[in-house]
Structures are given as structure tokens and as C-alpha cells.
Length: 157
Image (cartoon, rainbow, N blue to C red):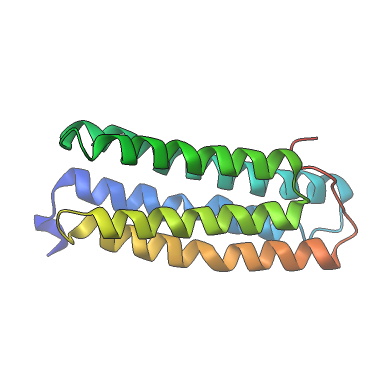
């Protein structure tokens, strides 16, 4: 029952689902007829996706302290590699490719978490749902990029 769920778990669910709103809001705003909103939405979408990737990668960093010494380096290096890949995509890739790389990084991160989880609890179920629900926003955003009048050359210009 929901009422018996610990407050921290309920809060994690609420924050997780609330975190989907910017993905869809920014993807949808790109369809605006206002050029400034299109540009803001295009750049904002990629930046938000990168920030969420960094946040989720940080959870791997934080969980490394609970591992034995042989497993810590892999987790630390992996979490950093994903953030660097996302950053490099923002820096040098065309926007739609950067979006695809960020989506791939999110999927790889989820797969890593599933493989290395000690148990399949509520957190992994939530992560799976949130990642699956955020995926279509990338398609909406990419479609808007191809059909809209805005073509940005880099996400952070």
C-alpha cells in the first residue's frame, strides 16, 4: 500500500516523475512558432538531459563507497566515463546526434545499474520506468529539430 511506503521512497517517486516534466516541456516547446522559444527549448533539452545523466552517474559514485576494493574502480571510472561522453556530445556533436548519444548514455547507465544491483528493489523498478518514460521525449525533440525552423550548431552556443 502507498500509505505504508516510507516517506523517502514516496518522495523519490514524486521527484522522479516530476523530473520527466522538463523533458516533455522542452521537447514540446520546440514546436512553438517563436524562434526564441525554439532555440531555448533545443538547447535546454540537451542541457537538461546532460544534467540528469550527471546526477544519475553521481549516484554510482556515491554507491562505490559500499563496495569492496576490487569493485570500486570500475564503478568510479564508469560513472565518470558516461558524464564525459555526454559532455563531449554536447561540445562537438550536432544537436540530434548529441541527443542520441545522451539517450544511449542513459540506457547504458540503467543497464549497468541493473547488472550490478545487489537486489531488484523499488529503486530499479522506478529507474526502469523513468528511463522508459523519458525516451519518447527524445523522439519528440528530434522530430521537432528536423521539422522546426531552428537549427542550432551546438547545444551550448
